[in-house]
Structure formats: structure tokens, C-alpha cells
Image 1 (cartoon, rainbow, N blue to C red):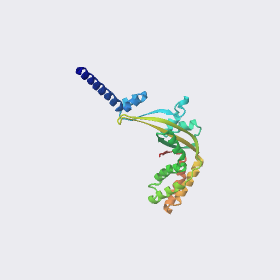
Image 2: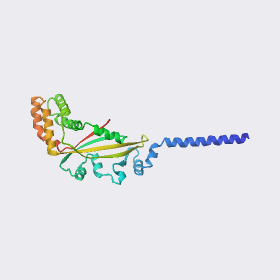
Image 3: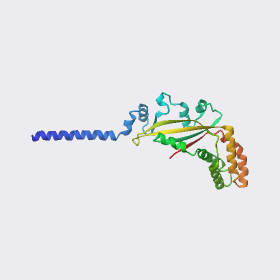
Image 4: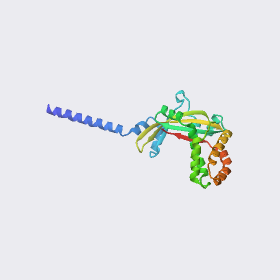
Length: 240
């Protein structure tokens, strides 16, 4: 009887060890487990495991059988040629505002509540500051003037053209992690001639607050700068 009991106990111990070993393996390989549902990502990750792999697993209108739009993929890389052809706005300037996060509705809310006018002015502020830097003599005062003007600038001619979202899965085998996030993007357009007028007004506001010597230099640049910027597509990222 004692011999039978000892054998039974040994069997139970062996089963427990096997069970523990199986559980440890499952929890220590989350990236591999998640990658099994994305064959393309698995192949890419195997080819170069040191580089995180990104796979689109869902997107707007996918449930209705629509393919992933080429114009959207291009626009994510700031290439708007296919976008302008798709939406017949070749003579327009594009403003792209983008947000990322784990919750789709929350990211959409960020963009809806974003200070749209500020996002445009903030993007322009950096560009104008770079152009004036090294040309005007009083850089500190110039930077203050640009910042002050950006808070008061009005760009009311932009119109929302469309929006899109995609859910991405990022597989990082070096960290053994899998992360899903939504990328929500809104696209606005504006007529180039109208935009150039708004930019000229924006630059005039900056120039009037400069020293006389800097005013003259800035005035010489203003017309060409406004014309150039009116054809420059902008992008901004909104975060919580």
C-alpha cells in the first residue's frame, strides 16, 4: 500500500512540473503568440528580428470590404500626390492633423477638440523662425515676435476634406512585446491664393514688431516667403 502511495505521489509531482513548464513558456513568449495571427509580420520579423515590425490589422471601411487606400498610405509619409488626385484638389495646399493612441474614440476626440487654428500657426511658426534665423540681426526679439504672432494668427480658409483611421500592430521581438494603436488622421485643404494672402497678413504682423533694420530685411523676404509657404503642405501631431 505504501509503495502504491509513493508511486501516485511521484506521478502527481511529475504532472505538476509539466504543467508549470507549459505555463511558463506561454507567458514568456507573448510576441510569438501574437505574431501567429499575422503571418506577414511573422515572416518579416524572422527576416530581421532586431527591427520592430508594423502591420495594419484594421482600418476604416475594412468591414465593408474596401481595400486600404493608397492615398492614405502615401499621406502618412507626407506624399500627397495620390491624395490630391483622388480628391481633385491639385491646386490646393494640404494640412494634415494626426493623433495616435490605444483607444479609437479617445484619439478622435483629441482631434475634434484640438485648437485647429493653433496647430496650423504652430507648424508655420517653426518654418518662419528657421527662415528668419541668421538673416535678421536680433534673433531673440524675432523669435518673440513670431511666437506672439502665432497666438493671434487666423487661418479660417481651411476646409475639412476627409479623414481616415488605421489600427496598427507593432511587434518588437527585442523587447518581446506586441502593441496595438490607432492612427487617426484628418485632412484639410485651402486654396493657394487665399492661403498666400493669409500668410502675407501673418508675416506683416511679425514684421511690424521688429526693429527698423530687421523690418527692411524681413519685408524683402516676405512676398517670396508667403508665395513659397502657400504651396507647402503642413502636418501636425496631437497628443493627450
